[in-house]
Figure 1 (cartoon, rainbow, N blue to C red):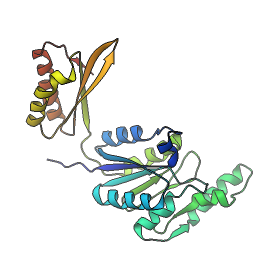
Figure 2 (cartoon, rainbow, N blue to C red):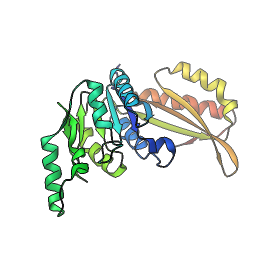
Figure 3 (cartoon, rainbow, N blue to C red):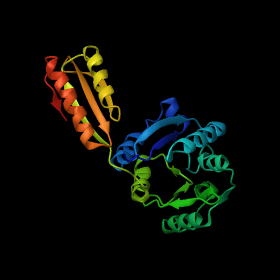
Figure 4 (tube, helix red, strand yellow):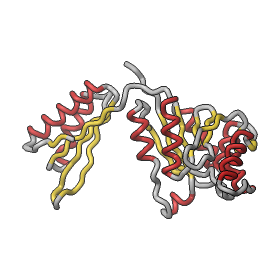
Length: 249
């Protein structure tokens, strides 16, 4: 059986933890990586605290095939991701000459210059590989298996879309959803039995409301398409036996 590579997303920024800013990146990354056969196995929100960033980067890069950080590589004093990724790897932070030239050319074309604040966006760990930014030009970077991306969703997505084809993936993660008007508590025992039957498939149940009625969404997810379909068929049969009508998505 093919073992898929795995990914972790580190969302860096006090503004996420305070609730001032709503994260717009995790869903995009998880969906795109899943389609490429690189399932996201963990996501963390990390404050703008050096020790927390260093600890999270080191723990996750040792555990997962790929780590993607978002946020903290802008021009302001609280953009501290680059320097702490460098510390996590034990290498110096430098003013990357190629990144600096990219910024110089970009701002010159707009009739302005690269001041010290903007120049901070050219900082990268020694040995890092720059990631092209087709939107605002300030590059992200990669070091080892860690990919450092900006927090602004439009920019992050543009960089990531160029990066994704260069990653080694596996079989695409397939997901099938069945919705039924049965309560989760009534389904739990039989659903657990199906999960035991298909240990390689992630089977989840998610209660919700629709038009004032309780519904449950039953999700089967995995990289073996045939096994996902078989598990989905078993879930649908369970729903029918309990008097429900499975609705397939």
